[in-house]
Image 1 (cartoon, rainbow, N blue to C red):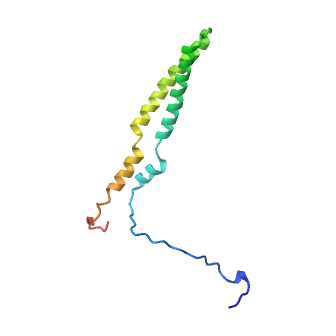
Image 2: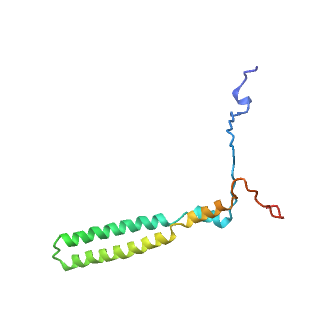
Image 3: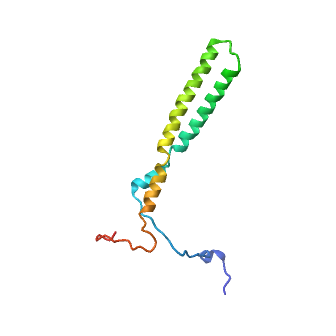
Amino acid sequence: MNVGNVNDQPFSPAIRRARLDNLTIYEISEAELNTLEKGSPDSIYLNISIALLSSAFAFLGSVLITKIESNVVLFLFIALIVVGFVVGGVLLLLWYRSRSSVSDCIESIKRRLPPEGEVAPINQDGT
């Protein structure tokens, strides 16, 4: 064996492969890929909603517990309470209505796979 210069020999890393018993491949459309890539705005709606509703409850508790002498400060607190409850409630409704868009997309992709042991029909065009 010629020891020579290390730069003379190409680097060949050791490759180890662990075989899988079963590999399932799902074909998806570009629209489904875009849905999965964008994700769901649900978590943003829910997070902002929780923050606004928590703030509104905190301001409401402050107004009910303390005696506010200034009408301007009282009006400001009431405005913050109303805005917090209204916008927080709307965002909570938006979250509730759209919370399953990504989950529905994934479920529709998984439903394409025929049950175990059932032969899937092949179209004449090879797909």
